[in-house]
Length: 366
Image (cartoon, rainbow, N blue to C red; front, side):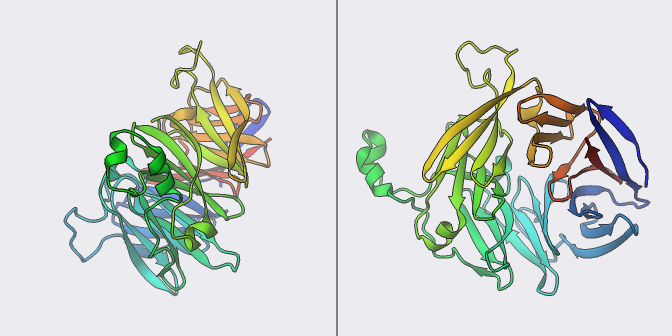
């Protein structure tokens, strides 16, 4: 264990682990699953759980399949992501069609598959959560406009009979005029699901998806309503230029969204205008902007974004622009452009960097 310390403002970045693997395999994807553990997808197809203290790895399953698929199946050369909850591991190709669920004691590698329509520009929708009884569930994409919710203990798809028609679709059609009104109706759900993010209380999920135009289009769905109602009911947070902008939950009713006044062509904005983080407050069926945070950090649109309640700050990470800590008021309190972080784990407060055959884990100390 090493203790490299980098300073920016009043914060120090401690490198807790720095491990290089002596193997022919390279790391395709990695995630922090526990405070001292990572799960990695290796170039051989093996998914490995690795203890950072003991330096011991354990093979969980392989994404290679004996079955043949017209598109070749899981692509180890494509960008991939790993999602974990307790001992459950989900691995998917981000912009392709295949993935797997591993649930020790239940099943080895349950195959996930989605339709290919615009999958190359739509993040594979995946989210893990537990219901009020502590039962693990998976929300996953089946098609561009279609997601399912599965009880992972029983493998029952709870939304198998759910319609792809929105609530009040008939009323909205009647109100419309013009050529669109002459089509068969009600029409199927016209929305591309994207990255899914569960609210802190695990009762809602946010989809950072998109719509025709094309535009970023972020919606929130109540999980219980989504399961029980035969129609789709969405609460729209906003629509913006199609930038695949980052977003995150602040609390159970507040969502942060990165925003560029210049990109959105705001009046009087210029290329030098400060980027912003907009905070949207959900109150019943209403959504309103509660706060606009200006920041001098010009890399937020191309980064992943998280919120740390402990630091009352936004955290942005990128394998291109590094790590930034932005206070709730917009001040950049820490920045390291050389640190190519893969993710920030809110439960452990640690950062993971992975590169080819090495991983490093960091923590920030105020």
